[in-house]
Image 1: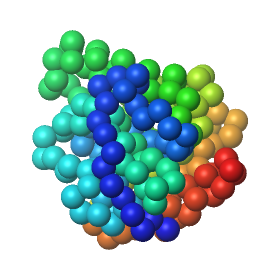
Image 2 (image 1 turned 180 degrees about the horizontal axis):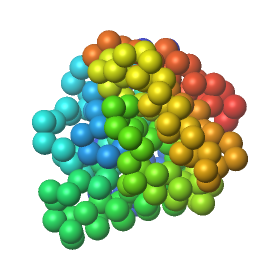
Image 3 (image 1 turned 90 degrees about the vertical axis):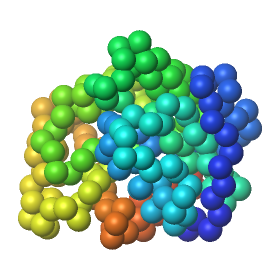
Image 4 (image 1 turned 60 degrees about the vertical axis):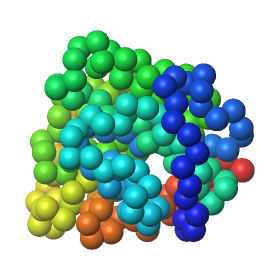
Length: 198
């Protein structure tokens, strides 16, 4: 379980990422998907990741040291239309450099809004991960905004969409930052993949 979480550093490029051997478990998603709230819920540390009402606020790679044994990494949101094209380009580079070139990155959680149909930008990003051989899982956020049946239907739709291109589905989790739903499952999964690394 997560007992200690502290901010380590922010990086503008992967050359600035910590050089130690602690593995990175990273979180990414479209802007305003509820990433900061999820990180705060997982670490049970309200102000750890800055929650913003303005989407697209995380523009850096933020490293948080967890239990002095691994990093939780908050990546910039992708695909937010209100940022200028040139800024969007730099987001894309910082994200793709980290996700595909950073050797420290051990696993990536892609966050998607459980209330929405599968979004083209998420599916394209997930497809890139598959092509790049990046290990990842999907977290459906804001699960408390749907009934149990609606949530199951939403996840099932996603699975069917992915199965059109994928033979095997990635691990999937439903979460609600407000209710704490999914915390134990996600943290246990992180523990299991870190154990495999040892």
